[in-house]
Image (cartoon, rainbow, N blue to C red; front, side, top):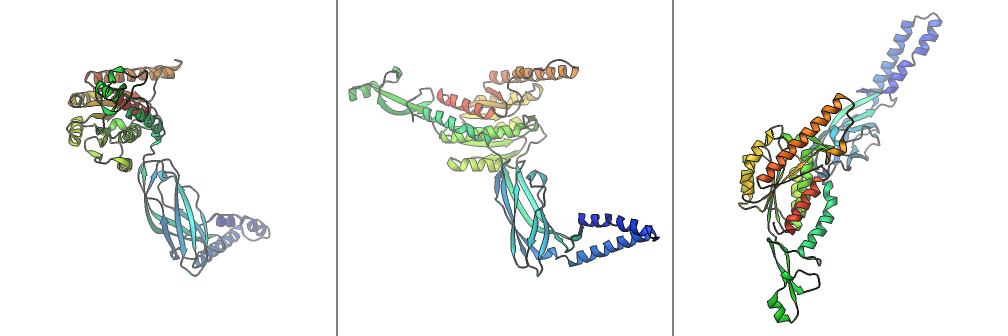
Length: 436
């Protein structure tokens, strides 16, 4: 049973007869008591006449997967199996992070008929969102009260990373096509392989002239080159406690996922093999032996339920996970946040085991790209302390980056929005230089 605001208004309206009848010599308490009894009787009658919510069957329609922060259309199909018209409201039982509207849609379903109720969602976090019920309220004919029941209607929605860095993919693919030789621009480097022969044009590198082909053809012929394919790119996403730190509007883990998705899409188009592991002390997600169109769906599906863990990452075990993918990876990308010298000791100690076997790129999301742009006027002691803390953090991050370079790796740090394209650009630069 539930009560409506109309009952409260009816009880409040009892003030009028109390005032009128008390002036006629009737005790006020007797009038008030009689009015409350009348309202109670009408309420009981209204509840008794309200159609039973048990007569309503619920069928749910919703997609299996959706992107975070994107609208999702879900539908409830309500069938009134009773003999009486059912009027009332429904509320879907999603948790708050599903982004369901706060309003309760009104329903009016004649006996034996069906009605459709649309429930728009906008998920605000990744992972599995579940609902187990639909709350149904059946209103009585007087509108004072009604019946209420929770109808079982289980549903699940897997919310995937939004991959907002996808907008950077077309420009990087254009640069990749240039490197692949699909345009007139050709590259030559230690790690490039022969592609084809073509006639020499003014401005070409004379070191690429093929003299034997020139003698056979009677005109100057030039060798063209393209970056090698079938390289192994291993992406390690740190899910330890540093990944839970807030940067920008999200956390570091979200920025790492965006970087991993953009790099994976680019590397797959380049013909390389991509492996992903999300790790702290145990494997939280793992994707390997997926190429072509199946790669990105597998990545986002594996990333969706992973959350940052408030524990330190075991970097020696992480290196062992990299070796499990391939004995000779071409590129290892570590997406972590080593911005404190003391907490980076284990990471730096494990780094030489990777740099001796492959090229290593360490990416980290930071709050600000340029601290100088966020100087504050030192008007209060709090301003001075904030600026000092910012300077200390920047100095510690620079020391860790220098240690990464001395160990043979390459360090990249940027804001969450700039980190994915920065990682992709570094990958393309390695391709262009023939180092991958």
